[in-house]
Image (tube, rainbow, N blue to C red):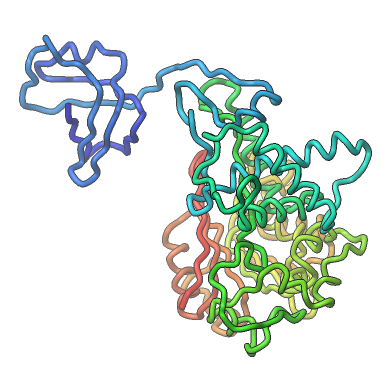
Length: 449
């Protein structure tokens, strides 16, 4: 049966709908729910699973349908059982499949599973010891243990697109991923901690039964942010080595190397002793980030000149992240300019967590700047109460836009978003655009030209 969905909201496969105001085919209204089995956007129709045998014929006219929730039972295995069977079986959403965050890296969830299982075993066998970082011996142990777990514990049907290159072990690409997970297992990556904090908070809300919880694992990694090529793809045929400033031999700058799509392998990246030295911990607040990305990346973060437009819910989260990452902490080169015309209201306090009760009716920008500096006193933050718009270009001049290295809109209206986007395009500035709607969010990195 086909239902015209051209004027209705978005309907997805697997959802249930209930009919109202049906002409002629009245028994259809008595059904509690009809399952959507196919959606065809090109013809604005959906196909539902319903047996209309014995029903009166549908008469010409309009009918309405609403999406309804259909309860179902979910069974959860113990931690020990789910380690051996990480892909849930049975009926219901997400059964028989991993949670894929990046469909270009289909092997990463299962490799993350066995790698973290191996790390858990190491912690059990070494009580009281801290998980090491950048430790080759530990990496070798985790790789060997992961191979053992993958062969002895994990069913074959849990491995999507399993490579046969490695025989009884891992292929070179699979081993590279496991080794990288082991390398940074003892360090805390603040951006990932913030991301998983949001996931954990939403999962806690799902205890009410209104939303469907994740079943049972979701693995997400940030290996794409590493300054070396993890899998050895998109490599130049030219021999090169990396210097501490990140520019490979044969290229005048990092930008020239990026334009040529030249990225070193991990071994090539660490071939320079000075680069390897830049990853050693020194006992400060940035040790975990330094161990993961090196001092060179920390220096670049400290020198960033950021324009943050908006200091509401998104702006507060971003300023907190900037403070923990050490963004704009170089007093000579770094700067964060945050602007917001609004004042703090009571209704803001439940989600704009840099603000407190005593801050109500205070400027958002100045209060958020002060709170972020309390997190990291080295940050250089300038707070303004000027909207970003054509009539304020005496404040935000061409020289101001040209001085920036990053623009981050945290806005709640399209007119301002489009204006900031146009300035980024005109001045060739990278922009991180994001937005929220209820429990949904969006994020995109825009690199003009």
